[in-house]
Length: 384
Picture 1: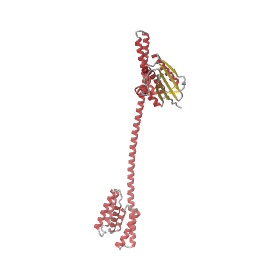
Picture 2: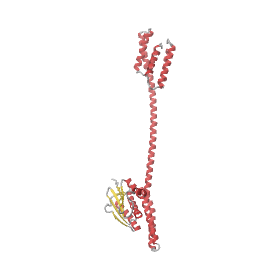
Picture 3: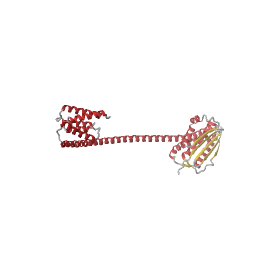
Picture 4: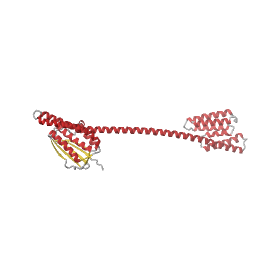
């Protein structure tokens, strides 16, 4: 738009210079006005029309011919559809043509001088327009730089917001994982201890009238169990601070032995075990050890509670790459391939077992064939 204003100013100046020299001032002013309208129209219309260009060329020729002075031929500067040298040559040629064909009173020398002045004037005008154009480009570059900077800041702001959201979600997932660990550990340790205490109290109630001493012993055992449950809750929370700790398979065997011995003491149920094939020096992540202890408690309790089992076989297998726990019983169960998914979803303990094993990249298996059998296998991740 700024160039249209400059072009119109140039038309006004050229018209003012040639107004008193023109033989047809009215037509001169009309042609100048038509050119201003045409230049303004082009500034609002980005598409270049050949028709408009031809009309503008005709108007410029008419304008220069009736200007009466050589400066009127500078109007060809506005023929911006053509290259600079074409505009200069056109203006100079039309001046020479008009001088010899119309005025016929200018010498060849003067004609050449005026032609040279026209060329110099063209170059000066080009320099002025070029300077203005460069200034406009610098302003536009500054605007683009500011815009790009604003866009970059906006992008960075959005990226920071996205990172904050991702960090929030990561922290939230970490809290959910902590909840899951706490709930699993409490369920595995406290739930089974309290169940055993209830069974012991029920037995003590039945023996109270006939064998008060034995009943008192069982009540003391139940009391110890409940106190131990409180300590187990505290231990379940402390476990979260020991995620990177490692135990040996010998420690795991001792924990499994403790669970089996306590269960036998509480229920008088026969439990056979075989841990002999596993070396005592294998390193096991602390979480895996706690998990296997909970699995054994879960399967023993479920076998008695849901299957009425009175015999169990517990086998621990493993090497430096994997650790595997197999628990079999002689209980009666309607567990089958057809209803396994529904039964697993309904069982909080088994569902938690499957979730943990899947997260660690291990394997689980449950089958009911002359008793119930559970197989849980986890990979061992050892630090080099």
